[in-house]
Length: 398
Image 1 (cartoon, rainbow, N blue to C red):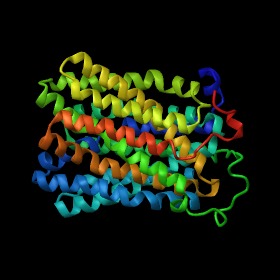
Image 2: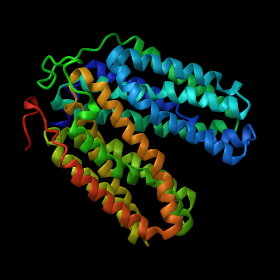
Image 3: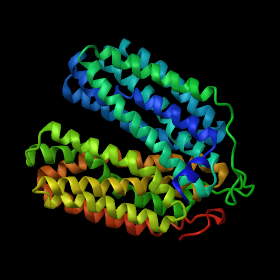
Image 4: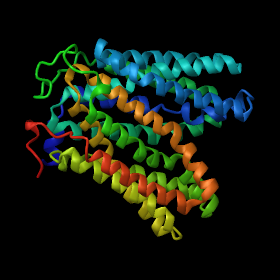
């Protein structure tokens, strides 16, 4: 499948959702600066601020499975719109909380309403396209996320030098704008692939009883823990241990974004017919190998090679995982499956930065990055056993 054909095959509902996602992510600036706001603007102790930030992650972890079930009950478009609307209102009101207790309550509420969006978003895309176009659709959605995230935190850094309160205003308004885009989209068309086959919610087994899904979730966690080292241990390793400047590290983040923007959509369009048992292990191995290269990264060229390798792992793995979960899920329980899938990611995000930093501090970089490579191999083995395969419409593997 050529890139142009793959993109032309995507329905209007996918493009509208991606536009809303881009607008929303372009305003993502509160969470990256939340700890600084709590400590510098409100004057909370760093330990208290850190606990409140951790509370956001813990709440998201608990909310994900319920958000998935709610998606199946009320519909993904309705839930996405409600999530964005409520998130916008909570963010606009957030600065009124000035004590630690009030901020903690506001943070929990914000985490709950925000987390409703992600399982609903994945479900909406999976329902709007057939199996043969899902990798492309998920890749385009990730492109919207990455483009937005390249704007939001950078703009947030500029606004924070003027007023932390402005972060909440802009983030809240972009959430409301994204909700308006979805509200005007109307009800998206739903595809009925061979897997859906008229299955009703009452006839399909609960997601937690699907062994293929459980294999996939077990496979997701190790490689996701490795991937999330780029937000914590990798930065500490490069800046403190290898003597890189913050500016040099920032250029690596730019390289990652440029590679994702340039290659994710065409590569996933070209690999649209590859079965999950091939793409998912490949993505896991590349991710683990990329971070594993840091064990030998005594020269800038090897660090750059590391980022290139694990970025291509990210490009292959994450759209493939989204599509694989959609393939495993009966249509009537697709939100429930996506909710458990996001729970695995939230778990990895909760433990990944902490675990990686702890290993780095206790045993050093070579041990951490060798372990990252081995974790990628473990994920590859588990993901090769998910049993998720393209349906007949996908045309089989090349």
